[in-house]
Length: 252
Image 1 (cartoon, one colour):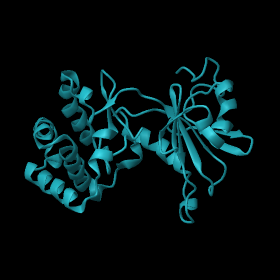
Image 2 (cartoon, rainbow, N blue to C red):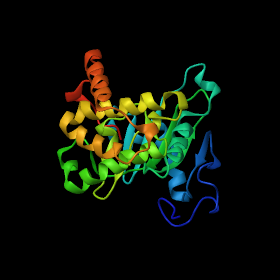
Image 3 (tube, helix red, strand yellow):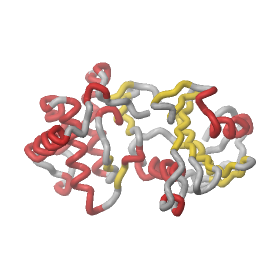
Image 4 (cartoon, rainbow, N blue to C red):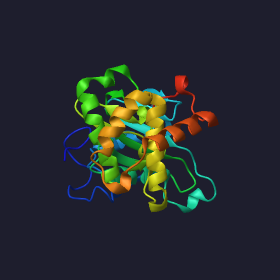
């Protein structure tokens, strides 16, 4: 695997990506998921403190794009959150849960201590979300139902899946914002239903129904849903006024 930022890795190849490799960067702890160049490692402490100085803010200041990378800042946890691993490392782990479903690859997680904020650096994927008009091109439309079916086959269920969390890069669909991925056996059907209800909510019933029918034709019995149940859940979402459709922000 090539090293982000150059050719020379900061640790030997062969380390398990899923587990990562522990690093110490001055006062910061880090876990790298790909080989990092010394040049990139030298920039990480500055990105932890204030990535916005070098990049472009993508969402409310917590996400910054720097070239081909994205730096996402997670706030300091509460008292109970300090008992868990840093949020950035848990977010990176969800990328590996999602495989082989495409999602942006994590490079390195940074944190000072369990009570501090944490930062995740990952690759940037350019494209258009499903909600954008350009993502409705024929190739994208044809590939969407198989992509959604693959989420079910690999038990990758998203608790906040909506068309701005699905990105078309011109050749395939990507799942963004993997923090919403849920694997609990007790909630799979509920989350699966919610995913389709959000698609109907954002895409409109007619467009969503076509993708729904194509997806149901290829998933197994355990993932079958009735369209009437999807519409009922969509209407429940509307009645709760939980979604401000015109101003919904794109999640990188």
